[in-house]
Image (cartoon, rainbow, N blue to C red; front, side, top):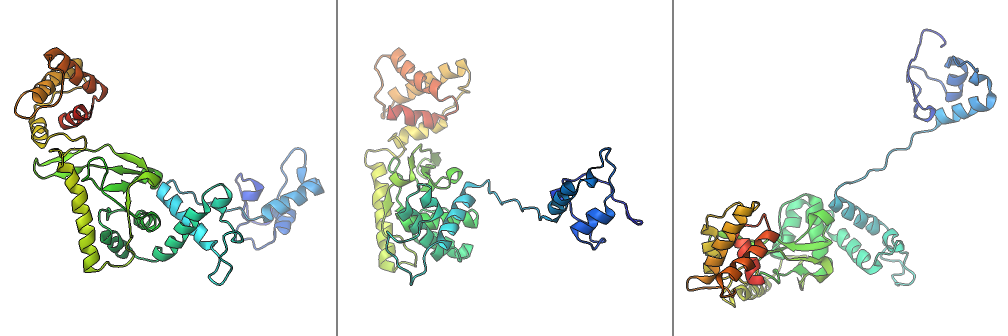
Length: 325
């Protein structure tokens, strides 16, 4: 090395950065500062030296940001589509409109354009403003990151607000975080009559989830608020139409008794047998019963079959499955 400066280290030429203390060009650095200690004297090759100068001069490319969060990815795609939307004064004809990158890859351009326009409405809102929009449309979760809140608003704006669960009638449907809303699921609901949470297994693709119109991007009037409340109450009333209240129509009385059972560990064979006996007795005795075989052994076998297939289920969940069967 020239002078008092000595550099020791290993780098790919394209990753090497000339120290700030040496204010020279890449060519000057190679010619004046770089010492060739190779046996073959590679710096004597003018072609190699020129390639080395070019590589040192190049600026390393920054790594592209990659989100491991599906919701962040989805919002990023909406942002890209929004930025590619034509200006308002441009021709808005569907045939002449420049398709977005997603559309070019086979996505539905109409849905993506609608989501992009909705992104333009909501992306500048702060979290409390997004939460207000979700609150006006009833039934949506208010927690989560801004991207999660933004996704719910965009989805509702494009598709309509989510209705109550069509299986249990009381649960609030939610966009699944794991796939950024491609599926919709019900997490069940809390039944105050029996002081217990009633599970629900409803899951559907986003496009098949029940929806209600309109979506309220602005605060609804008192009349509209009353109408929303009326629709919700009518839907929830269906849950008690058959004397049930669970996601499979299990009678409330039996659900309360099931929650009071001394439920065994059904991951063991002994626990499965004990649980089958308890469930068969619960379903066939008392004023409220479930339609099981009259023969006690066959009734236990019917219960046991469901218990074996669901080794982590609670007593109330097993009851729901039995009634559903």
